[in-house]
Length: 67
Length: 533
Image (tube, rainbow over all chains, first blue to last red; front, top):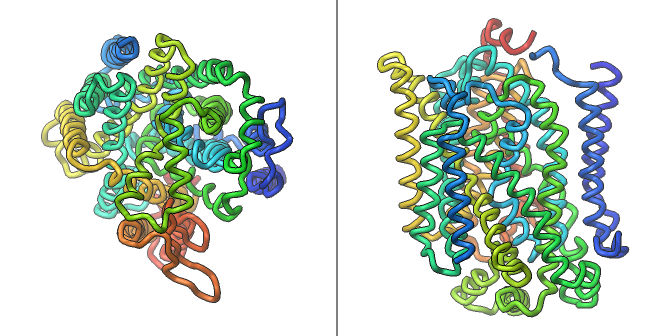
């Protein structure tokens, strides 16, 4: 594995940990945009951030040799 | 009546797309019928794969779960899938596609047989996967009957609704094969996506704005906890991240990975999968939670009262009364109730068609079982050689009719909760089978004996959990060690060390794959060489 692949593995692990957000566990406030409980907003934002991680995976670890 | 009209239009559209559309692009032979000739382009591949994976649960179940459990539903099921499923598609789905394309495989079991040079062990894997998949198909028929009855306000009885849905699904799978099913799934996914957006606008407007609805819930001591995750433990939350592993072991997803025209189709699917999840799950979860604040809909209030009564008096109630309250609590229809309250009848009718799209996702599972039967049993045991490829396709079509008819008859004669229980553990079972796919495609050292050990373990664990859950008294701690509750029966299911059973099931399955493979003979260098350069 190259340095890029190690960094990617580390990033995937970090994202996995970020999913287990114990912060905002018991709070509903603040209501983001006036209507989204903060815990739900975090996971919606997380879903969007995952797209960035996936883009990086495709760029650095696309299994082109399989084509 | 308006709702029935729109649902009828929807069913006619589905039949047209599945049977008649794109006929010109159809070829002949097994590969064309079962895999659409490995020719699906990016748009259909993305939406059809997503629709195939997100069954009725995405719209009906997610809002029903959120109604009782709050915003945690999104983190439990959607954002965990958003990271796990695309990574599985990228690192395993592309490999499935590649070996399928280069060696002509049409099912994952064919790949396992070739990779590990095994015959009957492949048949064992087929049997276990088929047994885990059947409950979903039955639930699909039950869901169709229930939704038709609810949307028509009782005008269409359960038996008729279930029959209509079964016949429509059977028809387009029978005539259209994978190509017809894929285009119907694409159409259905586009309907899901529109459904979420339209429902949010209409219901939000009806509630007088979501901000007002949230403030009202926060002011209520019984409803405020639904807007945070304080009622569940972080360990339980963590254990849910194992569930999306099931995606790559599901036969209908594994087989679907073989249908892409080029590997490039995976690129767009991997990137846009989380976007689709966000667009469908966020509105459905949010609306499910917000429904708790609606106090002028009798159906919703009855669910809230049943929940409160179970929470306060549950252990003291008789079993029959508890079952009645649980049935009253069932919240899969909560979006329908909200639409009935806030949407004009014609819009509710159109959205009812969107809900039908959600409950008719058993098509790809029926086709997958048919593909597996004809490839992994019919062809493997020499029948294609004897009778020809045309006979194989006829057998596949006959299997579709037999399976759908059986599912319908079973759905009519047995209570649905039996299959809900079965599917609950089937999900865990498929997650625990993921090490087979990973072992076959990523690890040179894996062997057929490792695969067999994992498969037998998964089958035994699913059966054991089902028996335990059916017979254990609720709630209760059944095994404690060192001051820790090891096995607990809760109203929602069974916990092992505070986690869902899927965690030990998957971990032990992976350990068995590794340990047994280490100590057993490897496949030939030629077999390994076909998968690892």
